[in-house]
Amino acid sequence: MVTLKVRFRRACDKARRTYRTQGVSAVLREIKRIAAAALYQRDAQHIFVRRIPASGASIPRSEAAESLGVTCVFVESAAALRAIESEIPPSIRDSVDQLRQRLAQGCSVIVVRKPSRAGHEVIGYGINEPGVFSALGRRGRLYPNVLFNHYLEILPEYRGQRIAHVMRIAMDEYCRMHGFTKRCAVVSPSNEASLRSNFRSGLVRVGTVARVSLLRGLFVWETPLETIRRAVQAVDHQELPTADS
Image 1 (cartoon, helix red, strand yellow):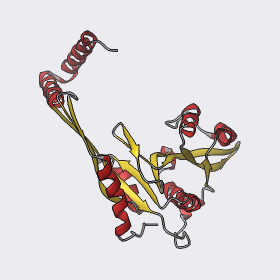
Image 2 (image 1 turned 45 degrees about the vertical axis):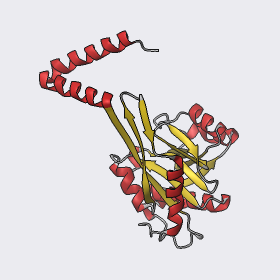
Image 3 (image 1 turned 180 degrees about the vertical axis):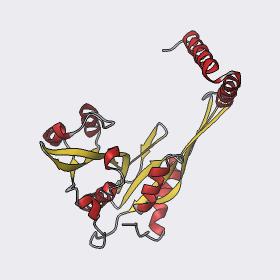
Image 4 (image 1 turned 30 degrees about the horizontal axis):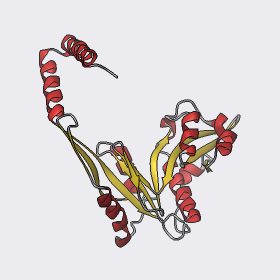
């Protein structure tokens, strides 16, 4: 546990660095920010839901992605992960051990592979879990027909080539095969790239989950889970959007 003395020393060191590089006005702004955060802090993420179409026949394929020869593979066991772990680059966020832990917790992993000299290489992946909701450090139960996306990443050099579109097609088919009628995800309001990608993929923003902290966590309010569940269910009564191809 970090003691108050250590925290104070770190704060002083940071203040000295800020003063040397940016001047006294920057130090005063930082003090003001810290004081405000100690009194009040609000964090929020938008909730997105996609209803799974009954059939994928009308979903257009992505010519740009298909030109790379990419394929999607669903990993649902440690044995399946071992079969492709040599293809996973060290540059992705989650290591093979971390992915193995996710599988042990009940998650599934979708990986996107492209041909390489050695066989295949993973250029993107996503972590999904059935029937849960996770945001802002809190985890709760959703309905069993909802598949929640914890994380999605396309390697930087392959972004802008509609790889996420290929993943969406594969995810929709996976959901139909396993009885999931919705996919759910949360995105930070400041993550404009992910917000645009979600809208293009036909996800609907159904609400916002928030966490308000007063006096450094002495009092905390969080969006009730029942409110989140109702928001996820409400998409059943909305028109299914047509996703951009």
